[in-house]
Length: 570
Image 1 (cartoon, rainbow, N blue to C red):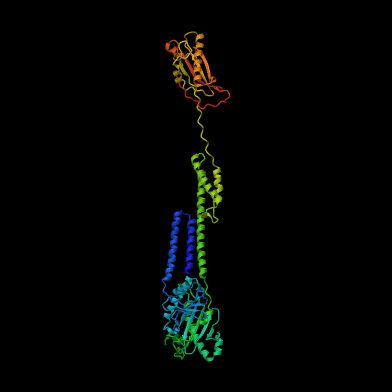
Image 2: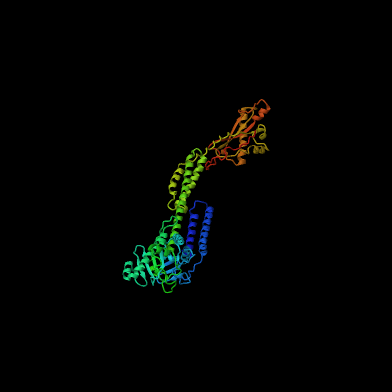
């Protein structure tokens, strides 16, 4: 992927992590913020590591690559070359494709990674060609170790890029039997065909038939090269090795030309020929030259025949990574939503169970439990009206199934009975105010004495006129004198007190009842002066009577102070 696509993918990861942490995680806001900060730091570190890994790769001279829109095959060339690479740059662009040289000492995976970093869209048109020149190897042991290293690099390249990267094996030899490059190719699922110069490809049988004895001699040499390549090259890539997967070549090429740089007089190739032909020092086994600027260095004819590699384009990779991130975020959101709903169900169920366990007689605990259920119901009602919160959504919300049990539990609540009213205090019997007659009247007289007002005011301050109460004023005497004299005298004295109270307090006369008992109701003995003094008295008391103390034309109103404090004058 390009740097821009990687940055876009990082922003997508930042957005998804923010939504999950702040919207779904079943933790407090503070903890969610800490987790989000950690995730963002990890994303930043990953982006930094990816960018630094590319910057620290050993630079490869890929400065004259075709444009990014180039869609011809691109082949990474590894191994030995029969001639010197014609360009200073590692890139050689021809008519049907582009060859890129992976020089000795360079890592194939690193070159491919830098190439795809500069041209991300080239992944599916990328191939690898391994060149082997048997005349440059004194033995096959060193060659085998080199091929195993290339096999490992190709497998890692396929794994890390996600592309199939087709493999092409090319075995080349030099011989004086040919004066031009002779190629034979075997593509997957096809017979061996002969490619020579600009002529059209043909089958081996056709070429031998039309070429005569020279073609037959060349074909014998070519068959020997094929056998060597199958035994010492192709088998290395196809061998079942538990440490790395086998790599089946998409094409196998064999080439024989008159030019070969660096050929050895005694090599693995000559040993193979001697072993399989029983001939030594056969003329024509060695090349006639070591360099050429006219002869083709690489098999350009194979470029249009190479299969297109499999794998995702950078845009496809970006979408796949984005979809993977979205899937992981969706899974995290579903798990968090499920957990949040589980906690809601557990909490409300616990509140209902706690309410049910409390006896209805425990009024205080029952009231607290039903208050908690009320809070639960208020929250569920709010969510029902305004929609469930995001952290409990995604089709997992359990609030609807909880509302009815909570409502039924609340409806089953029986409030405690109202507190019993205190029993009404019985009305206290009205106390009697006793006034000494001698302090109010002269002996034998019924008119109030001068100065008696103070005694009346001090004694009668608690007597108030109110509806429903009758002010009874009763006069009493001792037994001195006859009853015919004492009774009228006691009545007149009571009338005098009544008149004073009526006139002084502007009390209606209907509030009073006046009685004179004479000496008929003594409170002490009349045999002593002290007893007779106690019997000479005027008594004032309040007596309940429904129609008492009513102003004509005004309805009766209940008394607001039935327990009036009354002053006892005794």
